[in-house]
Image 1: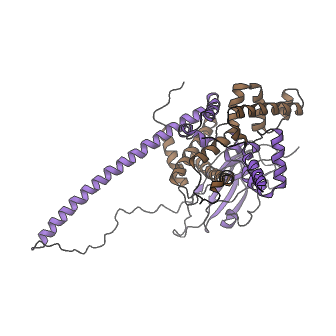
Image 2: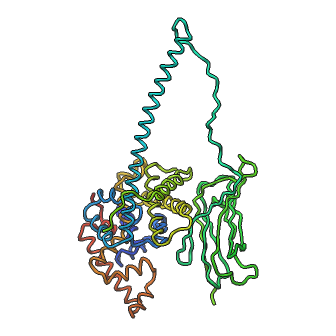
Image 3: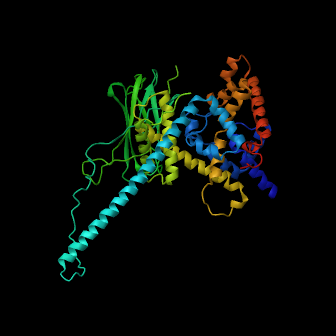
Amino acid sequence: MVEQESMHETIRARFPAYRIGLLDAASTQEVRAHLRACADCGAAFAPFAELSSEEEDGRLGHVPLALLARWDLAAAGLPPAERALLEAHLSGCVPCTEGMEFSRRMRATARRTRWRGRLGLAAGGAAALVATLLVMMRDTSMRREAAPDGSPSVHAQAPTTPEGAVAPPSATSRPQLRAAIVQLGNVTRGGAGQIVRVPAGTTHLPLRVPPLLGVGPTARIRIDVRGPGGAAFGHANLDHRSLFGETPPPALEASAPDGGALPAGHYDVSAVSDAPDPAAPGGFEHADYGFDLEVRVEPATP
Amino acid sequence: MNEIKEQPDPAWAGLLAFARRVLSGPAYDLAPADREDLAQEALLDLFIRTRAEAPRNPEGLLRTIAHRKALDLFRTRKRWSLLVDGLDPERHDAPDSGPRPEDVLRLRVLDALPAIAEGWFRAHNADCLPHLHSYFLDGGWRDLAEARDARVNTVIKQWERCRDAFARDLRARGLAWMLGEGRRDG
């Protein structure tokens, strides 16, 4: 039993190196055979089999941004041997070095901003304290004037109207959740709206919308595909059930009306929040959804 | 050596604030430190993409990147709970207190294994770099075999020798834990 436990632990400890193919042949075979035989370890491996966003974007072979973005802090906590290996990569990698310097600068800015904020709060707090004391002293003096015997008196205070209330944002405009333009090989991934380059000979443009996090019951998003010159080539409406993954999203595909090839050019695939705003009749709900739309460009085979 | 600017472009500071706002949404439920880290990470991602091609809508792109970074964080935590928590007997019955800083760092180093291998081959055996790039980036051996006028099997064997040399060196440096052998010191 102990030996079996030890075997599971040994195999799981190898997952990170196994997933990127850095184990030797014998260890690789051992892991493969174990994963075939052990359902628990197979399930434990599943999250390792998923690609991170950086791996999807082809950044494998560079220092992960999570480490690069806080390199100064991380490097201080690394044992010398590990630090030396990472520095060996950094010393010859221009994108990583530039990124590291950029993050260092931005973190320094964030620290300065936080300190300014704290100083500002402290100064504001002190000013408020002085103002409060002044008002209290003035009130006490006025009350003393109002009460001939000098005893404290209680005044009923009428409710004040919030004259400086911030007006709600105009809800009559139709917010467009337009965003990213990312072209990675033949797959475009990105945000709420994308510009997709469609080469000549493409007959259809399938879209995939993975579940969205945190969508409310009123969420409704319309996906529009517009080709060169603004011509419509398809649309789909998604409600919160399909957005949340409760029901499969409708099949989305842009295609030419005559079934032939789509005109080559740039296509605008945009997601528009289309839910009526209950707080503003005639307006549209504004929502900030992190959208992860995938558009696959598949040239027709000759 | 380029001189580092003391003051970053104000536009980047504005984008950083935007990333923080996006990650402050209720869908993410992030601790303040995680939110700040993810915002910085998302901004760095945008910076690197911008070096290749200026985005038409930086805020929209940043929103998407930030969302994907948050998903990466959840995925990393899932891996952590399976890898670290599940393998440490002292923590089997302990309440879930989240990853310790040393666990997070350990997983970051493991995620950096391809970068570590790239740096190692560059320094010790540059002949292996095309194999590494082909393996990690191109995903196939056929093109490399054609470029080298060699059989695919030959190229794979060459890569195996490269990989084994790298693994031997990791063991010699006391870093066998990266290969799943033994425990990490420190």
